[in-house]
Each structure stands twice: as C-alpha cells, then as structure tokens.
Picture 1 (cartoon, rainbow, N blue to C red):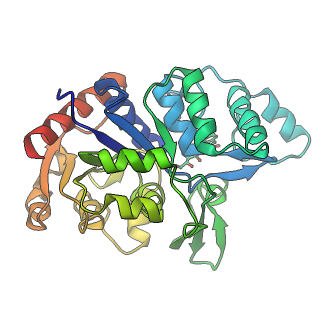
Picture 2 (picture 1 turned 90 degrees about the vertical axis):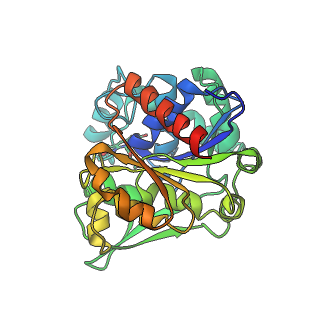
Length: 314
Ligand code: FO1
C-alpha cells in the first residue's frame, strides 16, 4: 500500500465505523484521519452523549459490543436497571462502562474543554492512534420532521420510536454556526482523497458535509463513497426506509446519485453490479466488491481493496 496516500474518512454509525476500522488497520496515523458525525449527539439524564463518535472510537479500540455495534463489549446494565426502578428515562440503553465515558465527557465539557480535545484524550487512553475528530466543536442537533406533524429529536425518533414514524424532512439545528476542529480541516486540505464510509447518507454523512468549513474544504477534492445499501437493504439502520420516505428507490445507484455533484468514485456490492452502467453514465468511476463486513478481517480486506482501487484510479 502506498505510504504517501493521505485519506480523510467521514463516518457515522455502525457501518461507517467498520470501514473506518478497516482503513485504520491498513494506514498509518499520518495517512488517515477520521471525521465523525455529531448531529446525533444529545443530552440525556444530564449527560452529553455522542453516540456516533463513541461507536467509531470503541470500534477502533476493539471495545465495541460485537452484537449491536454500538456501546461496549462485556457490558453490564445495573445502573440502567436502577434508573428504571426510579422511573427515570431508560429507553436509551446506557451500559455501566459506557456511562463512564459520558460522565467524564460531561464534566470536561462543563469545565470548558472542547469535544475534539476530549475525544483525542479518550482515544489516547483507549489506544487509538488514528486521529478521530467530531465534525464540529459546537453543538449540532438533528431533528426529524414526521408525516404526523412532529419535530422529533433524532434519538427519540431512532431509539425510542424505532424509526417507525414516517419521515418528511431532516433539520440540522446549529449547522450554520458549526465549526470543524482546525486539525480536521488541515487533514482535509492535505488529503488525496476523502472516503465516505458506508454510513446513512441523510443522517450521518450529509450533516458532516453541511458543516460550512468542511463543505468549503472538500470542494475540488477527489471523493469516493462506499454504498451503505446491499441489494436494496441497509445492513443496519433505517437508510432504506428513509430513501423510500423521501421519494427515492433504496438502491446503490440512488446513493451515488445523492452524492453525484461531488463524487469521483463509487464502490458498491457485487450483488448490485448491474447498476454500474447507470452510475458510470453520471461520470462516476465505479467498482463492485464484496462490501459486507461481518468481522475485523473483512473490514481490513475491504479497506485494502478500496485503497488499491484508489491507487489505480486517482
Ligand atoms: N441504538 C439503539 O438502537 N438503541 C439503544 O438503546 C442505543 C443506545 C446507545 C447507547 C450509546 C451509544 O453510543 C449508542 C447507542 N445506540 C443505540 C446507537 C445510536 O442511537 C445510533 O447508532 C446512532 O445515533 C445512529 O447513527
């Protein structure tokens, strides 16, 4: 693998974290920077919670729960049981180990540290060498507008109501004032390619691209996206349902079309390879690979293939 290729990966959620982990297994910490969605952050039980940031960091550290992809492995739930007994809000599953992350982060935010400073320090302590940055050091909050007229905070839609309400639009509160960490912007300026990990386009990648500094920095960059859909289905999460409710067919080609104006390269699953001619017709260079990543070995294998594709095509 080329030692000089510099990559910035944009990620959010479980699928994105998996490819980020594969890339981290192939590239040095000088070559790879990961920028993570924080539009799904929220305050819960008085705590500052950054679910996508934690999912990426735990995954890179080998600490993630292998069943859910979010939260910690070897977790216990005694605090949550007591929260329930006291009639507290127990719909968001916070395990005992995970709670330590939120407790310390909340305290440090209250003391004036930035989310990127706290994340860098946690990563160092968890043994993650690749730089991981939140997309913004100022809060951005995703709200889901639903067909029944509600404006729902993202985690209430996603976890409490299990994405059942029909979505009509997505609002990113605070996005105009969002500021990406300086080091994330420097990494973007120096990157040979920006990779969109197989994350939900609407609620994971679009919020990162909507941060004004990031939007500005990625103009004229080579961009590669990996499809989060295989055979019309998301492996995890509501991406396919969201495509349908927003009026699009849930398929890989629609993902490429969604990013069409900025995309140079697109990777889709071998099962979807009949869609390649449509995507190439839009001027996007496309390749089919097995993009299913059930374990750490397959994450590395996919990352290696994506990087060799880039070396040939960039
Ligand atoms: N997702 C769920 O579906 N149910 C949960 O109870 C839940 C708890 C949770 C706790 C910590 C954390 O870091 C993530 C958690 N997630 C949970 C995942 C999270 O809601 C989503 O992955 C993202 O926000 C969407 O990308």
